[in-house]
Length: 406
Image (tube, rainbow, N blue to C red; front, side):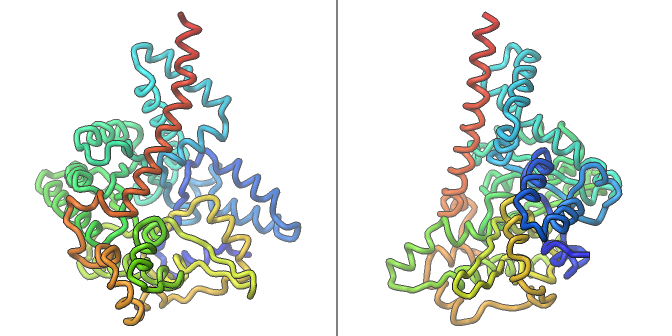
């Protein structure tokens, strides 16, 4: 059997989990397209690999194989809608008809909840078979209100009502961690998103620990509770202030050093979790594949340098396809890679930059500063734009439906 790169990664640690970073709704269509574009000698192999990673028809029989969970966000939900616009236009019209007093914004939110419901339904058999350990789908609170605790609390209540296997995705703001503590106290599973820094991860751990203490004191059932903490790796190094701060100071930082710096942040948080035996689990996202045309070599350090660790890796369709295209060049995984440290020379160079000190140091930022971190600002803006695009798609249908009904 020809294992997918991600299957090989999962073999380096029995607790390692591979998740799908998109709506499950789009998987079948994406898989068929990927197979159709495969080299002739790879078509059968790729078809088998993608079937093992996720086959909705047989997911119940694969409690520990393939994708063990799903992450979604506004842009991914928009992709799900645009993958079949005719169908979703009909669904949005149905939602409008069933909720005649709602405005376009309210219809948008109900449409988003419907995409979450459809995805969670596809993962439900795995959730049931694994007694709640796997089969979670993350549904995100509205990213336009990252510091509005009341709005996020309302969103969280709506998401919790969708399905028992919906994990509430909450941003790494001061208010977000207050919400994570509240939800944990209720026994609600959470995913801390828009998080990049060790100080955010510590804040999340503290919120979870405090929430668990309250939950246990109140006799809350925690048998199907989970917490994951997202490290948006490549975003930390590439959409924040690292590059220009280095340029301003005349410090040359290579792409490899940036990668090592990103990995050093998640490894620092991971080791803290291990030392404290904390129940949260680090989730790696925003991974990249690098291909050197000159040497025809490929790498994906975001997974290769973490091999052997107890991580969740959530993988978007494009990343999975890139791994398949480069699988013969990637080589084997080293099960001890997670134990490797960044060199003192590279770490010393990176720590000359205020941005990296904010990311790496345990006390790099106060909670009030989380929402002002460079990578956070850029990512939050992208999430908000994707949300507005979805709202616009819904609003056009809404206006047309109201005009026809007039």
